[in-house]
Image (cartoon, rainbow, N blue to C red; front, side):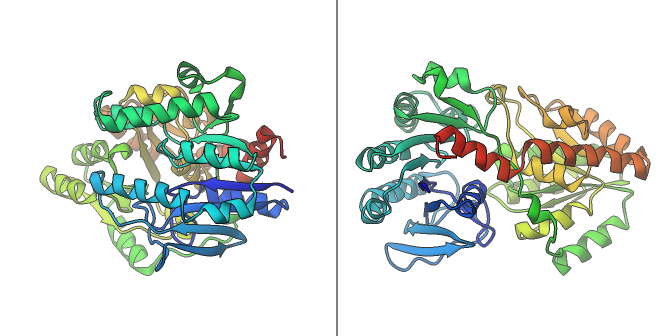
Length: 408
């Protein structure tokens, strides 16, 4: 039995909302007989709700997974207050959480917080506890804020993140990346090639066996909207810069009136996107987010679902999106706007892939979906479902993760 410590600032759960990877992996490891402690910040902009944390920390057990929430301040957007939130988490990780971590005696310490600063703390605790130290990479930071946020490579924020990434590449026992083609990037920053492992995102098959119903308000709004359209394109999830929803607004503005668009979710770009849609005359129904348990039935209400990526060299290292795998599990044809090193939609033949910026190509793909017979649409969606079950099942991925660590 291994003791596994996951340090993930943004870790969530089905109770609080995304992100889910740390929780789902931890739950599988607990079921396999291991002990797991997840340490996360009390506030994250990604979650639908956040745990109430009156003191400096709060212990909570969610479906068998032990969490330690560290008190951090509220923030909005990507400004200074978000950076303060990061530093507050790291400070409490070194002080408030120290006694809990030493008592837990981890055999494995996983740094998994998107930004890279937590690696210094994770490596410290791995050294103190004589544990294996894992650098788990969700997005390539600081490359992501440089490419998508257009920040200078010499900005102090970027420089410090780069120093931490270089440290992690040299010091970690293993570098586990969600991105399939990122090995050369980490080698350029000091990683030995044999340390690299690719373990993508995935789905929990059991979550699709008994999904929760779609909220009545959403069902009524979508039903009324469908009555005015022959084909509905759906989107669920975050409304941020990286979700390429500006492209979807452009597609909606140029589409025939018989095609409708529904966006379910929230995020820092939502108000601006709604205003842009009004200005451009785009017929889009914007709805608030739903609990993750409702997503399977929500996706079944759409004729096709949209997932877009910005036109950026960042994706030459590959993509691994939870949203994409949810879409594939739903068995709905996918409109995938992408220019990346990998494309699961093309591999599974479960939809149509279009290059970023190609508005007419998207409209053509949507009309192609609309022309499919019900049997053809089911067959296309089924291919996606089979692909994700064989390649992206969380129980299989969690087992592979531990085999990399040598504790499987």
